[in-house]
Image 1 (cartoon, helix red, strand yellow):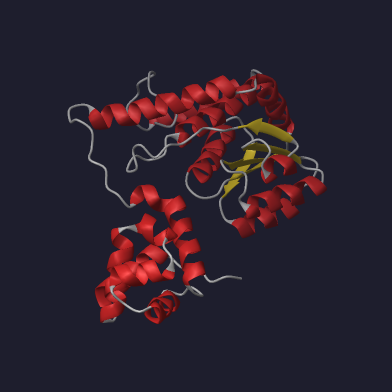
Image 2 (cartoon, rainbow, N blue to C red):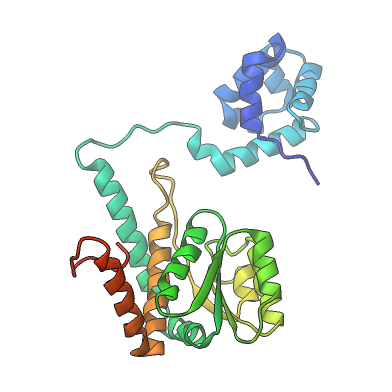
Length: 292
């Protein structure tokens, strides 16, 4: 397995604390990353005013195998995180922050609504409504939030549900699943290995497997019922939190509402109990949502 090297961070360390020649090379590279990712060894040496063997030693100091490996990793770093290397001035003041967040959230939800498949949502809800137990899986930021929210939406309907964001626990609980278990797994990319493995494990034991993920992804292939989820991101507002989670929560709410309707009027008594007991213990305002 190749070693993991954060080339940009390493270059900055060497620019601050390296030898004289290494500092010069690091400054040249950081000053023009695009040039460095394409330059020949003699061009790089000439711009830094050092010898070609010095460039080779510099590349090895960085943790790369030589100039070719250095250029490959630098180009890779630029492709992945290049947008974060050049600060962009903020837009005009006023309502900028309010509008940036609100517009992004609305855009994500509208994109999700346009691509939502009602038939698949209803099919998934039928499985959730009839399951003895539901396991919700998510990993990382937005997907783990969605799994947790799935738990919050379903327990109040009287469904035995638990959410897991730890990969080992996902595999373990999937191994204990059976035909009366429904799995609902969230992954924006569909490439999170532990979740793919957990869904595969659960399915072999007969559990219903519902996946909310990117079409044609490994997780989509592993799941039984696929609820397609694909919201494009951009790098226009790098400091803005991802609006995708708003759309993912919207998808959770669609599944929750469809499940409640599939279960029928019986869920109303449970919701009434929750409302009664919560509001008895705090400010009684019928207009407030259940659970604040």
